[in-house]
Length: 300
Image (cartoon, rainbow, N blue to C red; front, side):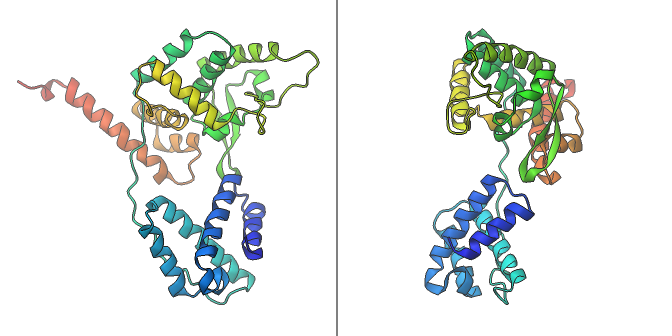
């Protein structure tokens, strides 16, 4: 990684409060571009023809439109930074056009499938079962991203709150509701969690502690546990993931009549166009209801 890339990432971290995952992705994208453009002087020496050739090669190599768009964004932001610092007098990425990409509809569970999942989770016994139930209750009632969910600290929950202030992407804060069922699950989990702690051992700061390097449960482990619970509930493999629970939260709110702007706020979306994808899912549901339930829609 060149000094210029390092300086750019430092600026993103300090001035724009970019999330660690964003910084890591941009670092990889810029390092890849630097390596590919090495024969033409790297990022600092490449002209517009070389940069455009690099970008064309992304789609030819089989990268998805979403990944190519992210790499384009990283390179364009890097060159704007280079201009502002006086490292370059031109922007060779100015003619890069964003790749066309359709936005796939999110995978969503029906309310009946959510109920089946909860029924199966509540049939289980033991601390690990209660922990998983609490995770699912919080994810479905609050619409948290998996990174936000697993990084919850235990102290606020000692007061049994009905909402939390969550720090999401870009360091932006928002209110996240905690439903009654989720609150009951959390309080039950706290009792088990505290009882399992060794005498005089320091308490973990995390709501869902783990012995791993992060100190809390990892997204991978949560996904594994959730998939097994979904299979036990008779749901197809791959249909239930931590992110699908967030999709279900948003879609079921819209189906229930929630305002799109409210859902945008609860999800922490900066752009309402990101939230609008859920209206297509909800519209499909409403169309099926009218087709199946309205008397004029019935076949003679």
